[in-house]
Length: 258
Image 1 (cartoon, rainbow, N blue to C red):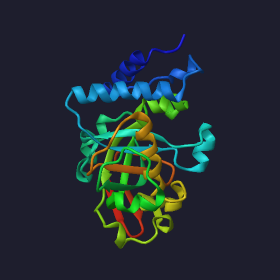
Image 2 (cartoon, rainbow, N blue to C red):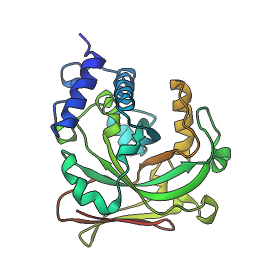
Image 3 (cartoon, rainbow, N blue to C red):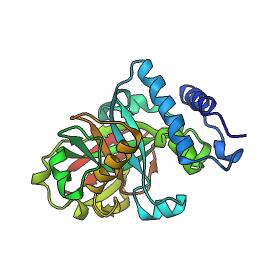
């Protein structure tokens, strides 16, 4: 028997509230689909909104070819971002206790200049972008050891937990986003490097994918929304007494002390 989406949403919410982790639902039901995952995610979103959270954007996951092959999918997955997920970089140390197994990933983030809810061609994407910035995506899976299937992670809202935004820039002032160099420095040592092209070949493609997803779901993101284009590198654990510096050439850096 398939896992009831309402049961799954409640179990994930309980785990989040108690900073606990659990086994993935796909352990007991290998037939769970992306549709099931997005149904769970929609229930999660509904509950958050009823409790006063405001959806302010979206985040994409599995945007690299390697991660798509690992999960057996051909397109990225999409989650939502709420106002309570926005974190002041100076407060990450104080906020660390609210997460069970946090990790951090470097991303390129956009704010939108107009609503997005339909297919948009790559040639028109630049007109959709109000600003672009470097961002730190804090993820916190509800599944022990980040072991999950595709439906599980979609239902868990792509492990969304927190977002730290860097300074905004006009897109026209930045070169080709695909060529921007990224580095992740932990306690003074570089642990990851990547190019912007790690995100779907070009981070701007994330907006094309998001438009298609929103059209399928019958949703619209208003102007001024935040869109996280997807991780450029693997995530690193976010632990106490650490210093994390996420740099993207041309966009600056996000510096976090825990």
